[in-house]
Amino acid sequence: MNTLAIIGAQWGDEGKGKITDLLGQKADIVVRFQGGNNAGHTIIFGDKKIILHQIPSGILHDNCISVIAHGVVFEPEAFLKELEDVKKHIDVTPERLKISLNATVITTYHKLLDAIREGKTSNKIGTTGKGIGPAYEDKVARRAIKIKDLFDKEILTKKLSIALEEKSYLFEHFYKTEFPTIEQEVERLYSLGQEIFKYVCDTFNYLDTAQRDGKKVLFEGAQGVLLDIDYGSYPYVTSSSTGAAGIMTGAGLSNGACGEKLGIVKAYTTRVGEGPMPTEIAEEIGDQIQKIGHEFGATTGRRRRCGWIDLPILKYSVKCSSLTSIALTKLDVLSGLSELKVCYAYEIDGKEYDCAYPGLDLAKAKPLYKSLKPFNDTFADENTYSAELEDYIKMIEEGIGVKVGIVAFGPERSQIHFRQNYFQ
Ligand code: GDP
Ligand code: IMO
Ligand code: MG
Image 1 (cartoon, rainbow, N blue to C red):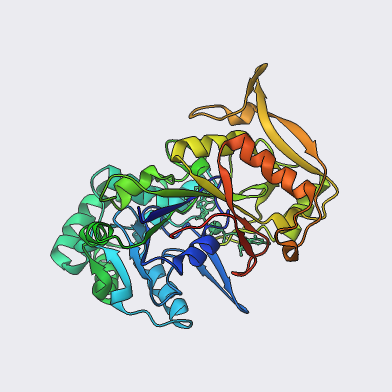
Image 2: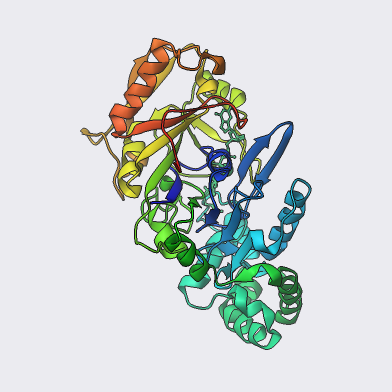
């Protein structure tokens, strides 16, 4: 099978962008199937850096076609800015970038709602503020604006009126905030629609045919399994299916199955925003990891919380997304530290758990640790890893039941060791 899924196995920011960019060199097509510009996927190439939010991370390879499929919530204004940025590095023709006519549009109202709820209500999630949750709410409530609606002012006005019926009351009477009129929003969205028109098409059939023709298709997940709406640490999650299951609903798999499912795992754990994180480190070494790893959110710039690697959530992610191998990133950040711990299980109300499950109360989880001898390896030590580093990798493989296929020792494309071949 020529399909490969890249899935974040923690709370996002595992290095999906970097791995997608690398494997994208071999892919014909890279597809985003869920999420939106809440994602921040960093690619470092030479002395340049780009952070992609909506555009798939294969875009820097001119042999590779990028697809934004129907499961994505799409913000046209942010997309156009991002495209400008990408075009500073590489030419992008409409043949190389396709947006589904059925993706859901993020409107000004969604962004307003997201911001107000985070600031004024008691249900603070620590969102990225991009309007993701409110846009998915409208989709599920069957009143979303789809990309195809942007090209007809009459349809757009009608649909926006329906979408705004309840919201305008809320803005006016409950949140007491100003909001654009329907006419203003129609004008804004219509003109954005004209700008993106050339990229819009039926991506479903395009992908279906491509897969049947044996094209190499890489599905690029955003966020991570622990942020999944069903599998994640609810309610502190995002509003989409971030795991492999999201590919079926968000893009379509012509033969019903994805071949390799590569989980991306940071060598430690990070989280941005609210919500439980059992292995979060309160001591000085947590700050040290944060500093060495430059752990700041790629979308919001917020400081990421840091903790030891958490095998119960990784084992869970392997189950949720049927991961077949993992890429272990940022090992260089742990190299040279004075201590090294691995959480192999939790204790909750006197019971031990070595794997999470949907609804497990992570806020109550007391992490149980094994201390390992720290390693002090550098990227140059290829094939001559220290026994300590081998032990760390082995402990992870044995703990989660799948092999480490990729080891990353730095943010650059070259700072990587392959232990397995992908897209052969
Ligand atoms: P994504 O959302 O999963 O694509 O990850 P982000 O881009 O949000 O965050 C990952 C960060 O780690 C980025 O700044 C990457 O440049 C960086 N990075 C990726 N792999 C490595 C690695 O192996 N070592 C180091 N030091 N940095 C890495
Ligand atoms: P990538 O793809 C890390 C988090 C937010 C918040 C929660 C809900 O770069 O890994 P949302 O705006 O989606 O409603 O926020 O999810 N979050 C991420 N955390 N990486 C991401 O994406 C994230 N996207 C959303 O911080 O806790
Ligand atoms: Mg990120």
